[in-house]
Image (cartoon, rainbow, N blue to C red; front, top):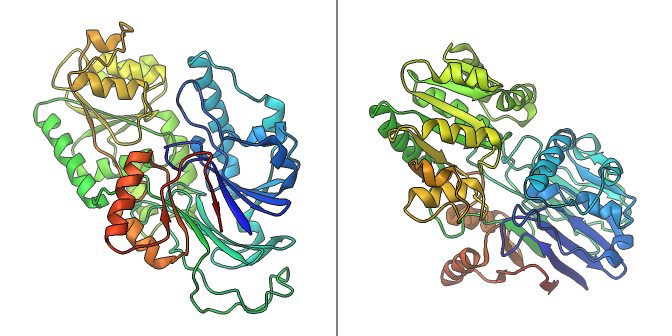
Length: 457
C-alpha cells in the first residue's frame, strides 16, 4: 500500500512538501519554506531521506523550493527533477530567502554547501510536455505547463500501480503564460516493461488514485476578469484624485503580468518600474515556449510605448517621482519586506491621495500585512513604532489570480477525476470551507489535511 504524508503545504500557505512512500521507497513533491517567524520548514523525517528515489520541484517560488538544501544536508544524493528555467531562477530565490532570514535575525538551517550540492535533472530535456516517460526504474512521469510562473509545471506519476497527479501552483487565467490542460490517459495496458518509455500508451481517460491540487483561494468564486475590474476601479479612483499608485509585486510572475496590464489599461499613465522587475521581463520574452498566444507582442508594445522609467537607486527614484502628474509604481517584493518597498511607502505617505494596491499573499507580520491593517484602522505597527504609525497611507488588498478558486477547482476535479483528492495551499479554515461546498455539490473522496497527517492509498 502507498502512503501520503503531508510534510507541509496542506492546511497552510507555504512550505509545500508531499511525501509518497511505498515499502522502503519514497518520492517527494516540492520542498519549500514558509515566510513566518524567520522561516518555517517542512516536517522532514531524516530517516526517510535514504529511501528517496526522486525529488520533483513544481516551480521556483520560495514556498515550494527553499528547503531543498535540507534534503542534501540529511544525506540525499539524488537529483531534483524540474524545468531548466526553474533551476536557473533558484539562485536568486535562495539569495532573497537568505536576506529574509537575516532581516528576521534567523539562521538558515543549512549552509551554502548544501545549496551547491543540489543536482538538477531537466524535465523538458528528458521528454516533451504531455508525454509519459520513465525517469527512474519503476517510475513514469508526465508534465505540463501550469501557467503560474515561467518554468512552472504540473506532474503526473505512475508508480507501483498508483497514478498520482500534482497540480503544483496552477492557473488557466494568466495574462502572459500558457497552461497545458491536465489530462491523464490510461497507462494500465502494458505495465510490464513500463521502463520502456517508447511503449504505446492507451488514450483512454482514467481515474487517478491521488490528486493534490492547488486550492489557494478556497471557495472564492471570482474569475480573473472580476479581479482585474476591481484593480482597474481602485486605480482609476486614485488617478482621478491626482494620486499615484504603488504596486508591490513579486520579482517574477505576477509582477510582469500586472505591468503589461497596467500599461494597456491606463495608456496615458507614466510607469516607474524597478530594474529588478525588468530582468525577469526580458528573460520571459526570451522563453516563447512558456508564453500564451499574443503575449510576446504585448510585452514588446510595453517596451516601445515611451512611458516606462526604469530605476535602480534612490537618486533615480527621487528624480522619477519629482515629475509632475500621477504615476504607477512597480516595486519588487509583494509583501513589502524590502527596504525599497518601505522607502516607497514613506515617500507616498506625505499625501493622502496616493495609495498602495497589494495583489498577493501577505504573511502574518509582514510589512504589507501591517500596512493593510493600519490602513483599515487597526494597529499595524504591532507596537514597534514603525513608519506605519507616523505616515498612514490608504492600502487595499485585491488579489490577482495566480492560483485556483472554487470554479477552477471544480474544473480540475472534472478534468482529473481521482479516488482521493487533497486540497492544498490554503489555511485550514479556508480549505474546510471549500471542502464543505464541494461535498454539498456531491463530490466525494476530498480531504482537507494539515502538516503531519497521512493518507493510505
